[in-house]
Length: 333
Image 1 (tube, rainbow, N blue to C red):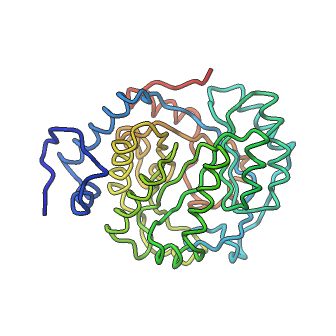
Image 2: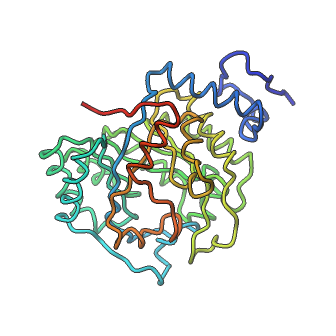
């Protein structure tokens, strides 16, 4: 097996690394890991994406059609109290976000087609009032719905493939991977900037699967890409397995940065859930985005994307983390 030399003497050519070399980087610790992170930071700086962008998320609905084994918002969970926010509520929160150093307004929901009409109402109003870039994360939709969102002014859309192996995808997410990939193609055709990514630590996942995840992300060529550690979630089939490996997640983030160079890469709140300063570690591994939660508390506790006790990112926490990483805040003009 080819071993990657420590210290790494030249830029890593991620697309041309062998499977064994990618597995070595995913498992990197010690000096190799620090070299990997150093190179990710250097690539981020050279690519001109070294400032950290803040997104303000409003979680507008916890209804979902899907039954992903890792998520408590799955349709088959009868214990979750469901909600949908009204347009007036969303716009009121958008007013608050507009008064802060937030660059992107992020509307997130389960896969809930009944929330589409509200989104279609608020997108043009948000654009009229603030000219915010609008980011959506609302799951799989028909092609014409994506086109309509784009025509109304939405700028970008996140649709994570979560796991790239077709069999494992069907086993955990219970729908075909190809449907997900078709939706990503439709989004790109509609003119969206597109985000995608994977989860580390799912049941049955191997290092070979993580290599496949990286290669799929490179094939998609996304504008945003993320790697998130699995967090066991109450009232789900996976509630009794452990968290995803933090190092594997951080190493995957660094690999994405080195390979793709310019995408926005979030340091997700799940990193902080696993370990204090986890989001700082994410910035040090090449990330350049943090998401601030503006969902009202009465809804936030019902948006069970990670767990009932998920880490909630505040503006103060984000600004402190950015400062400690020695980075600057990016403000869109």
